[in-house]
Image 1 (cartoon, helix red, strand yellow):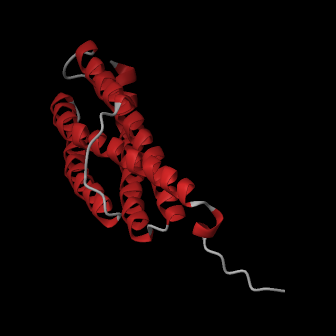
Image 2 (cartoon, rainbow, N blue to C red):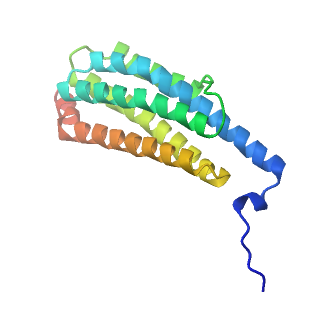
Image 3 (cartoon, rainbow, N blue to C red):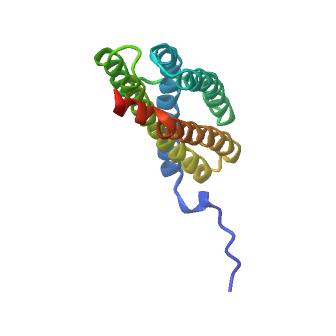
Length: 179
């Protein structure tokens, strides 16, 4: 019996590898634009928040998001591609939804904060899905260092989602119910 030590690259044809890499790079461009767009949206969300804890969470996540932009640039570098953003209609829609919540809720209320958390968690879930998928494809393509960088971002996005849940459940949702 022969020792089968084929790599994942042996399973796919060169054309299939290029198609998958093209899809991966396209996904990176998408999330790169999304993260850049979030650096503009998060200050607005922080300013609109009633709760000091929520405001602080948005401000802290802005700092993380700025580091995510740099890390995505690092992933582009690691795979030998130029960092380029591609318009992300999904993130644009999610940010628009957050702005709609700000416009349609009364300033200084926990109802607004509850809505902001809902909108922010939709963003986090989009990012979690994107980074999880990109990490998996990076591994498949043999971009292990890039996959590690993507996993770091994924972990931070998951932690941000958990923090938002904790804030909502600790008091914001209950305060909103009493308004």
